[in-house]
Length: 213
Image (cartoon, rainbow, N blue to C red):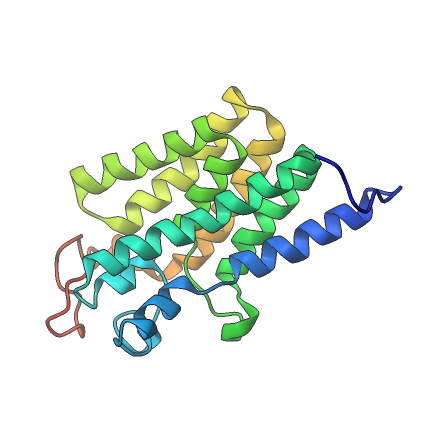
């Protein structure tokens, strides 16, 4: 790919990748989709989160699936677009997109929990690790029926698998994202420890008739 700028130093590439990756990741698809569908502000129902799990609590599985795909897709897109400029630039853009989803400037830095974008980033950076993480999530979700536990297991296992299959750079990226996933899920972890975390398809207290995930 021809570089229209051709900077002599790599730093401008890293800076551009970080900014553009963050801006792409910061697009709050869950909020946009629910508002355009006439469902109001997704932050005012359920957990108040903008991710697919909370969109599902509106009762619209189609919107939840679309949110999941778009939140994952922006992570994949950031990685693939930046890959033209080298693997290091790709890793910077991918991580920035993940951070953008968690802390979007448009929403006062209060974004989603990052699971879909985590998976999307891994698919873009190293697709075998992304596929592994998705299969890991699905296996736990279908057997134990806990969405949060599925995310936590996939996040913990991915850096280990990445270290042996791809290498330390991707493993480090996966580990950094995993730490943030765990931080964003601290309330879920507490509920899991107490046996109070709702299972997929069960109602969460305070959600009324909306299905929990």
